[in-house]
Amino acid sequence: MGYWKSTVVPKFKKLFEKNNVKKAGAAEACKTFDDAKEDYSKEFEEKKTDLQAKVLEIYEASAAEIKAVVKERKAGALKKVSSAVEKFLEELSKIEFPGSKPAHEACCKFGATYVEGPIYFVFEKVSTYIVVEEKKEEAPPTAEPAAPVEETSSKEKEIVVEEEKKEEKKEEVEKTPEPEAAKAEVEKTPEPEAAKAEEVAPTEPPKAC
Image (cartoon, rainbow, N blue to C red; front, side):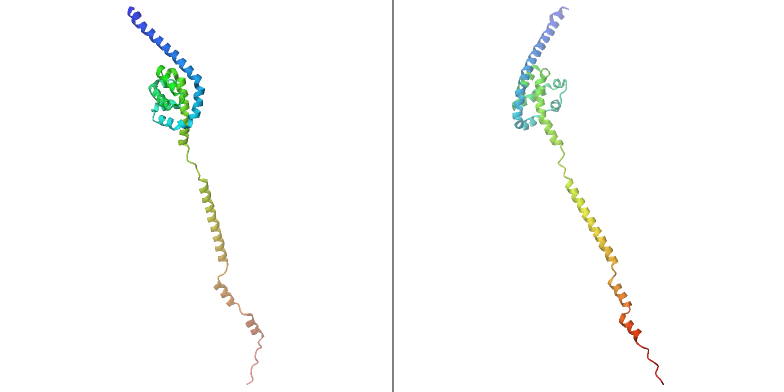
């Protein structure tokens, strides 16, 4: 019992005090960050285009767990990847990403779980680049199949019309009598003058012996 009071209890007491101090310091850091959020947002909008390539480069070089945390906010996710979060924020602070420097300092001093607000604020800004980039990659190429289809259909229509014209011409040719047949019919028909002469010529009387 004496060992418990003299050794164990003081250690627990010291640990609780340390945690309380850390929590208090983290709360103060979060409050200071919250007060400057508006300024960070304005700065972000001003530098948005210039920072895009650099941010995407840092993001692509990061571990898969960091990418997951940046895309989606989950309870307790920062605790599992606290060291990776610190590294990611450090890289962002090097390119002077708005809010990344104070968030990185607070993360290193108090731990990622105690300063989730500032960290997720920075991650939210980073994610705007990621969403835009993913939409570009997922977007299908501009489809322009309508024109070729219309061309094909119009060509098909032309072919059909030509075929119909050919059929009509063929039918007309078949209906028209061939020249040879017509000639034969003409030859068969007796000439009017010859027939008339035969009718008019008198029959000669028989000669007397």
